[in-house]
Amino acid sequence: MCNESLPNESPTMNRYSTFAILSLLSLSTQAMAVDVRVTVTNLLGPTSSAFSPIITSAHSGAVDQFNSGSAASPGVEDVAELGATGATLITEILAQQPTAIAAPTQNAGGGFGPLLPGASQSVVLSGLDPMANRYFSYLSMFVPSNDTFIGNDSPTAIQLFDAGGAFIAGGFTLTADRLWDAGSEVNGLFGSAFIAGQSAADGADEGGVVTAADFANGFDFYQGQTTGPGYVYASSFNADTPIISFAFEVVPEPSTAALAALLALTACLRR
Ligand SMILES: [Ca+2]
Ligand SMILES: [Ca+2]
Image 1 (cartoon, helix red, strand yellow):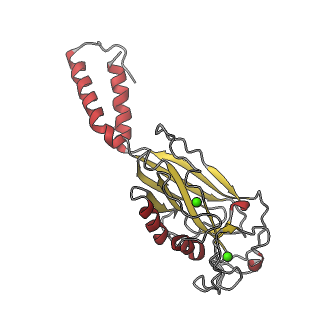
Image 2: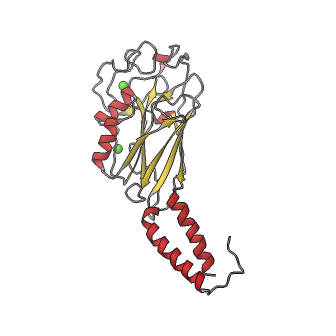
């Protein structure tokens, strides 16, 4: 885009150069904030399981949603049993780190609902600081079930940015052996979510701890049952069955686009 015939030292170009550098300085603080779009896709077959909206968050590593072998927090129990938009969990996340950014994924047309087999949802985590929001976490109910969920136990397992602040999130896929049981509700048809005629608000207290879910046999209760959306549930899982994928991309902001243009202009002027 540079015009090679431009004289290097004209007074006009020096004025432009000064303007460009001053503009760069004024934009530098805005440009540090990054918007990242998270896109999730349900990889299961058409009569298989779905996910509640995925509660996503970006944090410094200080946000630990749960621990295997310990009782689930009220926020994790709420998502794992009811699969809503995670208001209690988001409150817990912000209590652990006030500068964390957290939000649930939405359907393509907007609105919150189940992430059905084959479908995708997304959310933009806005204004991320590469240090305060370096790591990514997720949590979502896996339905039909009583309290089965996906979520990362380790707060530092997934990096959005490296230690130098560079965006490095490459995406990942979860397999069925990554499902958890919250240990908060007894598994069975009674009180299961996503099954017609059952109410997720029902259920018997389990009083247990977060453990690996019985993905091989733990969904037999729901086989042949009609789901909320109307299809008859039929599914089976192996340990290595892919269930959901996560993808990340930086969303250009107007300030970022302007900065890129100014950088290009400055490079031209310095030739
Ligand atoms: Ca943990
Ligand atoms: Ca359970």
